[in-house]
Image (cartoon, rainbow, N blue to C red):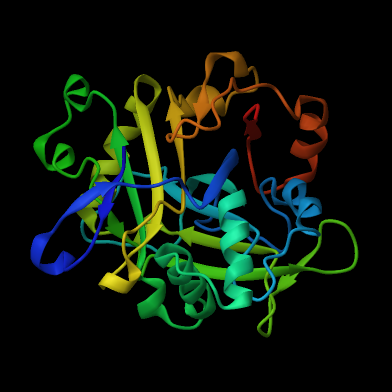
Length: 311
């Protein structure tokens, strides 16, 4: 589904081909309504606290590749203004949770032994090593979206032409690595050269160009009628870094944001799966027993729920 760069000599040929299997398997997804554009991972906002207890094992030692990866992207709830680009504001934040695939774990072991030759894994390790402090390198992170049956939704041409095209996340992105500390559900910034437990990439749509913000805002009421395939990757810029491979991906089907934010939400209406087809399954109700407790505890958020896939 996702066509990515392949070598040799991509700059001359411009050749792309379908990605190989994703490096991180899709695990689950949150949707959070918040008054700011970013989530505080260490404080456990969103459902991060449910993800943290799983982080103790499976470190990819000898690398800076996190065993778990979270990618967040906010959708501003206010209509964009051409003459004003606030960096903060009310948002729906989509939170994607990923876990290292068996293939990535195996290749990471080869990095430790000095025998890894997989360009995508070597590039990922390089990127994770510098993305926190080097914004130019962090800007290699790419996001892409493919809307199925684009023509039937009646989008204007300026939106349709971007369907499936990757977007470099440079000034709108922030990457941070975290380690677990004593006590369940606690995180601290990862330091040194050890393998982090968790990597978090946050994408702030509030600082996108006006045309992009306008397009995304105009699409929100149509999400409930569409199938949206989301993918992420690290940009390979030379033969040694190609072919590119999808970092992680997911499909969101019939995402009715208004309904999702309502108290009476029927999880059976939705399907969520990996776009590469290896983690298909029905969405099922997972946290409803703790829903009221979560809502009372989360002062900043008006609605919160968790999707999870049967795997």
